[in-house]
Image (cartoon, rainbow, N blue to C red; front, side):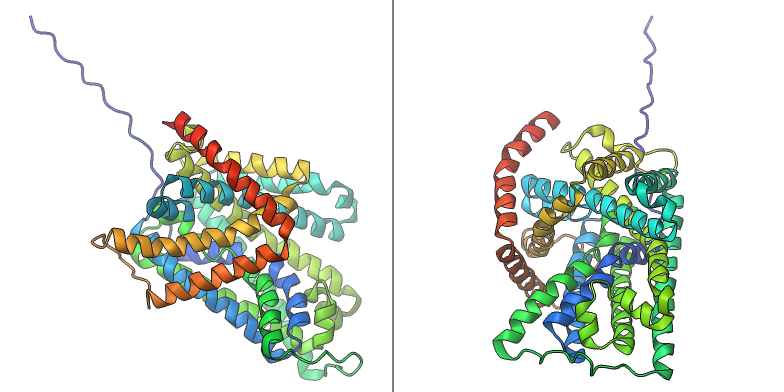
Length: 448
């Protein structure tokens, strides 16, 4: 008698669903880009470039850098349509160790950014409700927990949360812009009390522009947002480029309008002297209530950044786990299509940073490496074009190799200037890079 073979059905592996569209891509880009940078950076830019046209031109130049970068990353994200952000591209082009560096730096800096956004949100709420002022860390922790509980419910809820919070952010900023411009129609700016210094010329102008661009480029950081979700976009070849470019153009327009609004109510000298230009502008327009209204603006605008950074961080640790460079459990997906373990791990990391108070230093260290990650991504376009010429590329970077070379050289120059400005931070980065290789070897051996 022949034994009947027993057929065992394999349990299907749950995958990230392709259900996100252009709306989400634009929203996550706006969510990651527009934050405290646009409220604080104008002061430094005005100090370096005390001329309205130079001031606005520097913001336009920073936006152009980001657009050229988006042009290059759009090719990578559509050629390698897998969630995980720049880690995915760099690993494919430059190998597992380079990917390891980019991935872990990206995850740690993103979760630290979640902590930073949460504490600023708590500070704003503490100003609006004084009884909460003494519980800032607790409020920040609650903000991280609530955000994670919403996102862990599923991909549809994540999409809805990101789009809703980004729309709210855009509306409150447009309301501030409108209020400043309306005030200007019936009033004049007094620039005689403290006239700004003369604008620099020649080599001094280039030096001042380099310093000004540091704050501007940090304000545009996050333009790569939708690339973290390449494996979840319905039609990556068509929708990722549209989302990248549309999100950047929308953000650039808002940044220019915000700065025009500041110029409409404040002289250049007042913008340069104010650590928070939005508060100074609101005080002119709304009087004594201006500071409170700005804190309300911050409280309404920052949840978008909190959602976006939490989502992006989870995709990085998820991709690392898929490649056994992080615990394999981080690659799990729940019934709602959300990478729940990765979201929870990112929330725990952010909570630890909040309790330890180390997130600001971590962000400062990782800031050296985030432009390096962009540079490696731009380099990856050249490597993959040469090594994989026959690979299908639904989107090809416009103007390559010239546009990609330009944005790569600009990024390297910016990186060099940033390192030179903080030698202590540069030394810390060098030590971390030396220690990273043995750490990679240990993790890779265990993963295998």
